[in-house]
Length: 327
Image (cartoon, rainbow, N blue to C red; front, side, top):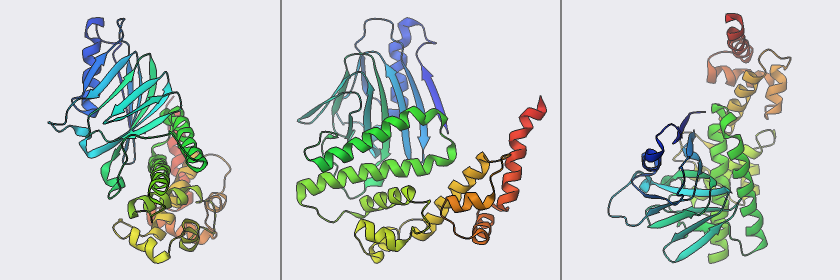
């Protein structure tokens, strides 16, 4: 997993607040960062790349971040931003809306619109930047938050919050290969919250293609191990036609069928890498991820990776053993 780590602890105490402002500006643009803590400002940020998403673990004393005007473009103008409160409390305001963040609460907002986020005590946060094109054609409500008004929304919003909380704990140890599938799951869950909010507000209109695409990808990742996963099953479960599914994916680099096989191959490749040196057969791994023919799996795996699954596993075992041999 690509990661960058930043801390104010290596700076002179008098320079730490300025350092924190520079760290924030490098990823989020020239925002107004105000440190509210009068003591030594010890803060850190860990930045990760998960597919198209930027994920930032932030731990800092009391501070306030604001974008008071939009006269100048900043790097976040091409993104939406989601903040999950992990520890401490926060307060976010934008336009005429305000929301208090308790541990486990989240809020999605448009950083092109003036906003302010205040953490009045030491807090730990997960911030996620999402390219705007991921939700192209969909109106994002002001401060889309976990504040739910119906049981359906309450359950779905809680699922997203729980998933992101668990993801925050696992970020440092996630293998790079799962970045795309994890980001698709996040986008799918978030798209579901947006679609549910839209249903509640406007009476259940048909989801726009970008939302349906995210939900389809989420469904695929959740059912990769099921050999019955198919376009028919997806269309049935998501209540749309196969023809519409094809239209939704027509601007992608690959068809939906190909996307399913690609994700299965990536999971198998990671499983072979992790199983290197252990007694896990190629067939067991293939069947565990939805393939129902060893011959078909070996054929498509070699077409993807250039070597057979057994050769791939042997090479990974040699890589794992080489550091030990060096000592």
